[in-house]
Length: 520
Image 1 (cartoon, rainbow, N blue to C red):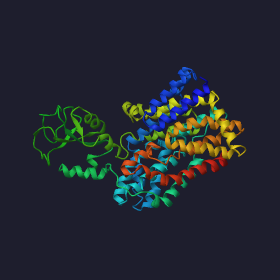
Image 2: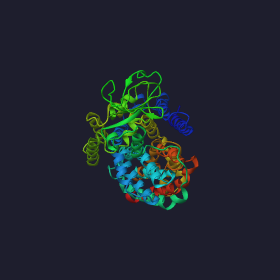
Image 3: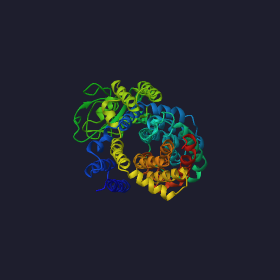
Image 4: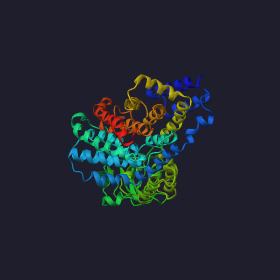
């Protein structure tokens, strides 16, 4: 089969598979790489090159850095400090939340920032008497704008930077994205404030996250404790409720409040049987008894995972709500050093991120298991599998062919019209499939267009990044959009109303503003 025809067929099938949402993204990506090999478009080393690509390793390492900041309570601390002082007026809260999530996204990615702040925003909304649906969509949309502030904001930034460097241009600087990111964040917040009241729905969320202060008070009341809140839930240690389940090895054990667990690492603060706490008396444990255990967070996490132990609230989830917990200072120092390396260019970006991830594990700011679990393997495999397709589109001449069709269709309309067409294609595809996959598909075509017109590749790559971030029309357009759906009670059709003006703004910025900063 002709390589160009094979590449176009594989591309079309991949897009259909992505849109159908019936095949896991990682499976589609691996199938794409294998199809390129078996059709003879690429050699096996070329088809699998994405799995060792520095861009992929850079992205994977950033997930570990994000986990360290989240699990150590750094993001919870930042959220409490900033949002806690914003008052109860919706407009002020939207502005503060949007600015905070944008800044956090720049350092720890969209998904990490939204996941870290989501529980706090819901709690603040409840305390302020504001429906969470009026705050959570702004949280997700502002995070997309914040992804353009720094190189580390989203995998797409890393992809376009490397693509520009490999195709006659140069890599973008660590903070260079802020030249478009800052006005994007300002404009996004302005639109959220001006149109949010009219376009955001009023819904009741299905989930209520943990309010740490309320949770501590509730435990003290239900277990008849005299300890203060700071004692039972702190940065180094905490408590968790464990239900004695069927076939638990604890059944038949004699215990009393104040005793230590058999391993000696946890203290049994209290026991509850039915509706009443056991006040000091010894009990023989039965199925359904509830133990309130106190100890270091790592020990609580380990015990909650033992057979026959049913945690009422996962201790790892509770720990993330505690500001500035164990490892917070180490995480902040290592993050700062990584930023210095990235900003100065002393080492390649992938090396800087891998050094940071390694340092976090070595200093025990995160455990090895945490590091493995923190990596979004779907994202990593998706990008690794789609990089060979991007290579094939470029090397087989497919990009030149599609670019020729595009330019013949547009005639002598000029570079800005060509840029507009590419950005519209990116924006539309970005509502249906991953923005990383979208940019990997469109980037080689954009590079071919810039070459054909004898223009700089820089504005094309930056514009694709901006258009790719405008995934606002559906809850499935980005993981962040999906994260806020259930807690806010959103419906599928709630997103596009506020998403349309934001997408138009992003498109205008990509087509008219970007070429002013990065000329053709």
